[in-house]
Image (cartoon, rainbow, N blue to C red):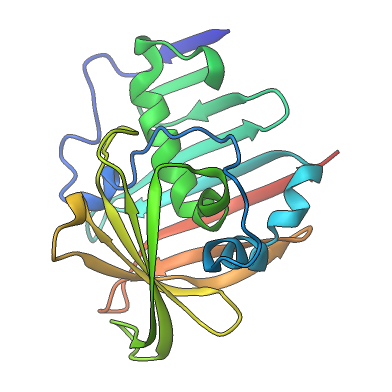
Length: 231
């Protein structure tokens, strides 16, 4: 099943966006759980955010907001039916509905946005869902923005899977395995940009960081209208 409606012919609001983060995290990795090691730090992070509650979740809806400049905010609305594997999207350029298992080239652009926005929303759970990455743990590291003493967990994806393979993420987690900050590094390069993970709210047992700020304190990415439905 696939429907796509273009609201603005030949219009792509992404073209003029100066923030690299719009295309951040474009992975098309499977949501088939990997072999779970409950003692691994990545599984501990997933569980800290409510991973063990996910079996009861039927759908997640949310609005992804990103500040493009001092005036403009880009907004995308999503509903992910996890039972049916169906994605519904409404944005400034297009509305779409498709099945993840049956997505075609026509919907690939929307699916890239879905993967990007879902990673910002649910990255702790991707650590349990995704294959194709390696992790490295470094204790007693200062977080790049607030200088808190944390455990640094480096996530390196392989060079074959996803829309943008080979990228890396430095997670700075506290003693409760909650992400305080992270740094995205394209292609596992040496440099990246740090964002906070803050304003954590609980939705029927699922914890989600709603706000992500830069070192300057500017809120760049945030979520609104989050709804978690259980069976």
